[in-house]
Length: 256
Ligand SMILES: Nc1ncnc2c1ncn2[C@@H]1O[C@H](COP(=O)(O)OP(=O)(O)O)[C@@H](O)[C@H]1O
Ligand SMILES: [Mg+2]
Image (cartoon, rainbow, N blue to C red; front, side, top):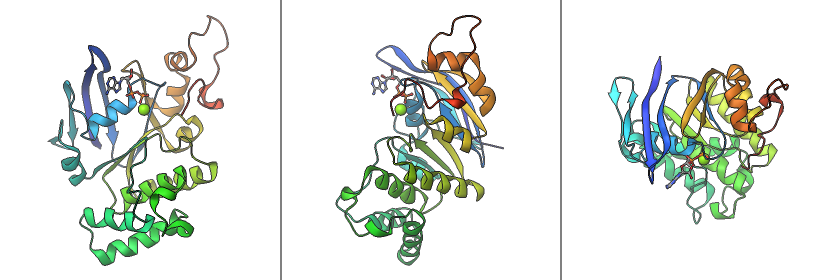
């Protein structure tokens, strides 16, 4: 069943189509990868799906409801939550209190929020820093904290923008385990990432964008073998040359 249905989504910046008639389906319970080279429009798609940018045209449906252009607050009330490429936490509040506040803001009782916050602190290995101001945490720890804030009340859809970028491999694995566990419990994810090994590990399906357009979608292995996808990442491959496999390389050319 489709949880989110994206149809012909388009937005222009200064006359240039940053997102150009993008359509795809997000199935309930899946982790859908949204991949593509830098500047291909992935963050802009997330901005529109999460209510931070109004599309010029196109439709987004959630089940039977048209949710096109709803504000981020309204979407959050419907369980559409988004994590940012640049982490957003309250830096002068302790890690624990950030979680508590996130729970209260989502209508969870204080007692329940405290219990969930404590469990998330453990799961996210933030115990040693839980009473430090969030501003004192490392980038990776702040990302983990943001995961906790997002999941203190499980969302219907979690949209993650480059959660693994510039994060220590140990914390990256904590994040991946967190996503796997929530996925096993039925959570739905839209995951933007350059990290091909992690995308292959976590996603069965992916949508690949280039220059604002969807150039391939479907089974992750098929998408990564697609000629247009490989060319988008690596540039032109001369005719007849063996085409390198994206699955064996670690995000060529891309900086996180
Ligand atoms: N607020 C903006 N104003 C003007 N151009 C933008 C803005 N946001 C993104 N762009 C442009 O839109 C294109 C897609 O950007 P983005 O969605 O950030 O790509 P990605 O996340 O795939 O790296 C890029 O060419 C980028 O420069
Ligand atoms: Mg981006």
